[in-house]
Length: 140
Length: 162
Image: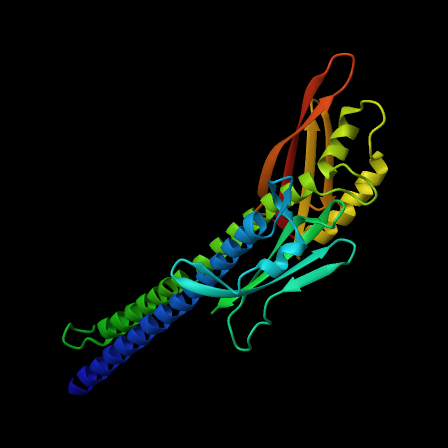
């Protein structure tokens, strides 16, 4: 009978330890998922801000939203704050006819990066042509 | 027959139950870690859909000075000579959608005026099998005829995973 009790206690203790390990692992995985989601949301927010404000094409004093002007790439800041965190980013604008321009540092190695490509109209000095605004964001 | 004091069977059942509970609790706890990412992907696709709509509303096909939506709307309205012939705008739109569409996603562009419909998908003949992200609006054209009037063409753009 004592042997059975000892065995039962060992099994229960083992299950409790496994459960605690599972809890810690689940919490850690939850934190990683949340952090990745936060970075991806920051990327969306920054890309949206760039397309609607910082890179927006201006015609006759009026801002044309969803149309980007590549000549404004040089005026972009190095860092952008979203929430309470600062993010670095690099931007690439490319058009259907194969032209492209980029701005920003290259992505540091071993850094989590979020990327988003937005279809936009690109001003190519004479007209608005189909293009893609690609933004890569990482924590500064 | 096993007595209560012997507990052989009851112990085995208790341990099995605890193991089952442990596995269920583990799966449940780990599922929390993966709920945020699909939601982010969904938000990004909705954003890309709205941008695709506005890109087609503003951008112009090669060698023409009217936007994709306006060119299609003129073909739909069938009033006089359209700025871009139907076959040309169909080819140009297909090329643009191929370039603008996110990888591993299909796109559908639909413009409707009364009972006339213009539908184009990329890849050709693809259809949404699950989630579909939609953005719609209207394209307004002022028609200069004997009496000026305004035509509103309904436009709908959708993105879907292939």
